[in-house]
Image (cartoon, rainbow, N blue to C red):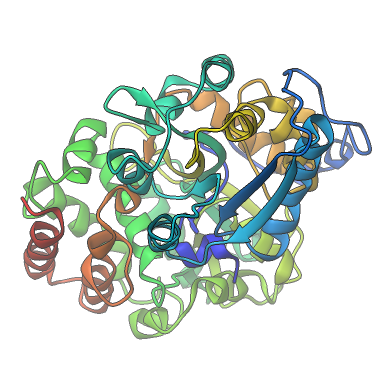
Length: 452
């Protein structure tokens, strides 16, 4: 499994935002437009970097496998332009623990790529993260919406560059299952439930849920809550300024129970969902394109990679629509990975400047498996029409999004298996009638983690 998925993640990390109606992937849309318009082209050269011959730079991130390989391409271009020598060290899933141990030993990496906004701010408060220099801040102001800049700031000082973004408000569906059932892409929660019932009535369970991975359930809750309760309440709950026993949480859980508690809508039933890991939920939907176990699966843009692993073709066997509007507006929930300097050196600041530019984003975008919030990046860098559409919608969202709530929480509440929010929502999936009991458990765990 990719590190970003293990992280939660963001894994937690990854790619683009949508509002209702902004994204529809059709087979026609993936035809002549489906080729890489800039394949083989060199990256743009929009930012000047200092010469750093003889200087060494160590960078850490959770990325392994293909993600690490593609990020290494970005680092190689930085080496080419500056003369610096860059080494990459995987951090493992616990970035805070890894960096803390290195700092205690007196040898921290120069730059860390951090997947949780709470960890970025923790690093800043501890003095581990160093403020961005003038050149990096200039690139950030030029290329990123204020919402993304704010996520990388702490107490008014800019520390992080959100190099990689993810959209967590997407529902992916099997076109054969939809066609057979006569289902259509829904825009509202009410219509979503109606289309789910159509699928179930046709003989295919409506939606696969990877409930074995508790982070998928937090993403379900966040999308419903943001759309239904609104961004202000979302911010208050994310900071534990209101309790999890609040009536807005009652309403969101009751809404989720309309899906999770209805027989025939969850692939394998609730018990089966609790034994299904996230990648397997995608396989249930697309592994057998003609006779799937489920008609839909919800999760972030990184589902596209799992669709390919399942042997399905994006735009033909698999299509995607924005998470339906539960309230007045469809939700836009994001995740992302921010680069922060742990040493205030010329080389560290130069790398952050590069990562804030469209030049760096272009390299990974062209390789695939990546979407950027950098509004100066040429959409032609993306290798196919689906990714271009997702990226375009991400940029169009501007500041109208909210970052993953559980990634903002203390890890003991929002980021640990078998405890906190992950465990409470797994228990709720097991028994969706227990709304009040779930709220009480969530509040008890949150109060302990937030210490307020």
